[in-house]
Image (cartoon, rainbow, N blue to C red; front, side, top):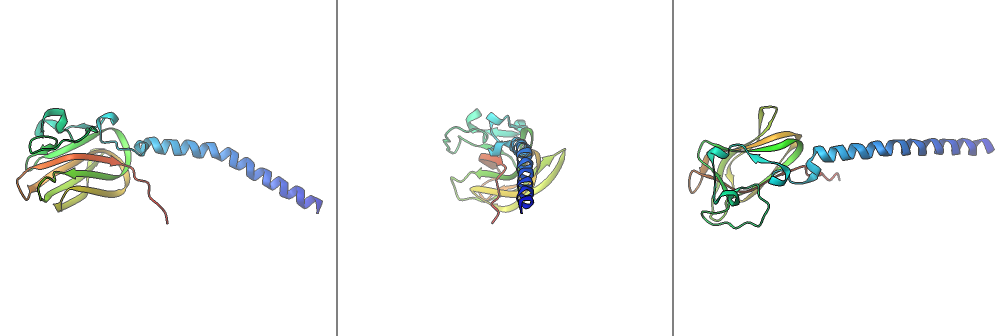
Length: 182
């Protein structure tokens, strides 16, 4: 009986040592995942180093205040507060570095009742993958896609909208959204 209690104590001691050794590794792994995933924050903004690489072919209503990457308070009028693209062109968002993401949220012009026709691509290592295509996009649209590395996003103006041929984006966000397992 005495040996059984010693044996049980030895097993518990070894188990605790294993937990102590593995805990820093798991913390380090969680920290690395957090960095790769943009610390679970929006990576499509100026503070995170994102840029609109298609700026020469896009319109920014009232300069920087028309950029959909800004985080300040939004004032939106017919000629103020959005990034635009003409028919057949794209708005391309480049990230500062590669991130592992699974969610893209875009706020389209919604001051009038209109639907947009577009395709959205995810770009990694110069390979474009369609993550969304629709003829009926309106207002704030959240796109969930499988977790993958992302270098850029491309929003292609397929056929304008129901009011005109333009593509108008007020705000764009991209991040890693934690999934709840139930």
